[in-house]
Image 1 (cartoon, rainbow, N blue to C red):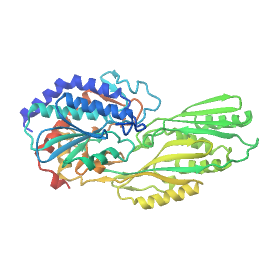
Image 2: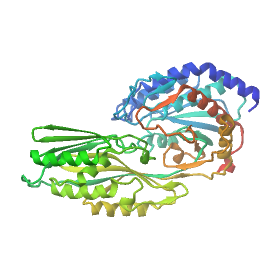
Image 3: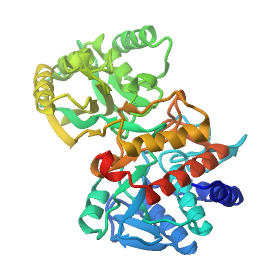
Length: 481
């Protein structure tokens, strides 16, 4: 891009910066968590409201907007037989507990915007949208149309909205970026496997020898490290006292509370949420609860045996070692996250999310999970499969994107990476995951107090404007395949 064009685009973005901040705050205030389907809201009211916000913003700025039955949309400008693209998603994971800021308030403190989606992916949408707007208003010559694709269901992992879009769009972009990952660029994303260990419970006779576990629950999403878990026991004062002492001994350095009323004891454990792609940086409250339960005998006895074994399998590692599935290659090591636990009078289930390396054979992985479930007296139910993403890290497109990042940040050392996060790139040909997280910083995706600085928002928009310009003017596609 010529220097005069760069200056004009940067000037436009600087002028739009206050508006960018306010629009992001407005968008964060929409609680766009997946919900029950309603008319013209296939993934719930919240995602539909956020989708409407995006499309309305596009119309206000005089883009061409296309609605694919409220599942996906396009915000387009320019002409050309081919198109370059950028893709964003409007849905967010549930907020969970432990925030110090309103998760849907869009609060600003010390130049930082807080809220669920501030980074993943509403902040990225705003940065990319205004990058497109600056390119459009600058009049910079392009040979490809630019399409900003909007998805409404990404966080559940199987991307039905974009599958629908691919089936109905007339002109797919020949290349694009997915601002939902890390810089300088991502060349591989591990495969996903969502599964649950399920145990059906039969009626068992109890007596006074042991306490009864009546309640065990935690988590709201498989792709979030469980931030809170709760278990309820009923028993004698002596039995509840043993449970109390076991919890206090094991959890002395963890956040927990004990509440006793009559013959009932409630144990609540507070963890630290994190993205399931890096569960090791979080504190899994469900895993801690299983560690406590492993040291206690209780009714139902069949559940007690299963949870004791399950604790050994999943409560002490995040790399699958306890399940016998650990594996590592150039794309990284397998990770396993315990995301949801539910116990009622009829059944127990523990839902998990695996991110497996690109060379690991998923059929063999599933066989090992089935064996581990059987060993714990459970059944393994596969909930979702999503294959890995991989491109040549030396391909022309990814190298060109890395160069833009290096020029804009001065970071000449960082190289394309592989990681365990998942993006729309795995179902879109020639789309590269590209930012927003920079090397060396801890991801705040899916965490409490998710945030983005106002300055980072502007920097991202400047980077994405240059990336979109390059993809809309240079011939990189054939060489990058």
